[in-house]
Image (cartoon, rainbow, N blue to C red; front, side, top):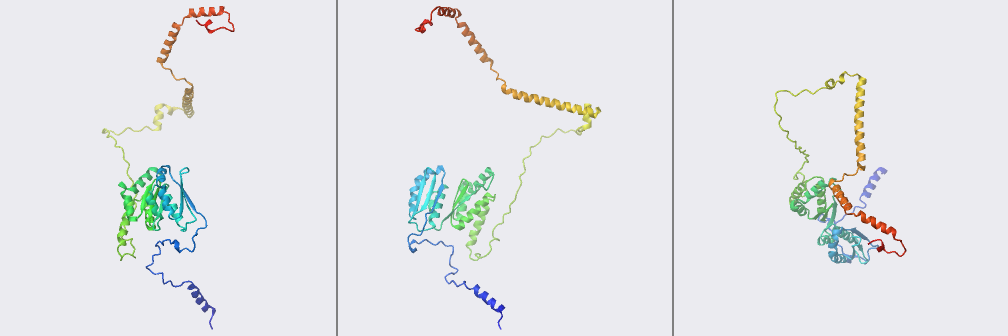
Length: 367
């Protein structure tokens, strides 16, 4: 008689292989990561997208002139993929959106990457390459990785190298186009190359020199050519760099040589010696306290007097120069000498004698 325990494992095995069917087309020579080209003719109907999708990005003021010149080129390139684009110079933004004719659902994301790269100072001929299926892009933000501004500028310059040699070597090894602009690094290429470039850039911001990563990439490139080492571990061939935190010695100022004396230096006087010298040692405890209080009161009074002088200094007029005073006195004396007092008196007397009427003229009072 067959028990239930013998039937259960058979059920488990049958359920396990229920959905695992053989795939004769899935062989080892099939590249699962190869990009599949988009074929619009294979679609059952023309209108694939149900809703409109749009993306917008801002651009800096200095890019406005260049974007205005190359915008017709961008429009023609996006029209081939049935994508509408708009350049708004008032708001300083670029917008891309799908149309009724758009049949590729992923092309709008490619168009979004194009306007992002144009805003990051990448030439239009290079930015439009992102529309191809085998080219991807990545914008690496490095602005917030280093807190010190001077240190950030030094590490960013280290990524470029002398005359851009380090960046050029990195481009050749990763197969990517790399541009360092402000607080970001833009990379364009394959998925593998972009991933490697991002790691090198982040390591550079973490104070790991790009030369170390470039050496590893050069060794890996040579190992890829050997079919025997294709499926082996490459860690034994790669150099292992240890981080050394070498503390630099600060420059100590040199002291001048003192004159040689055979006698030892004088002994520093103790507290009791100082009290004996000033006579405080023979005073009583109460007299010492009174003396200390009197010294504190004298210091406080002096500070109070200085503060009062500082407050009153704002109300003291600035001292006038003696030269100006002398010139003013001379002018006053000259005016007094030139003034004819007797003539004025006679004029006032004549004016008082005359009767003032409503039709009086000015000539009656002034000769």
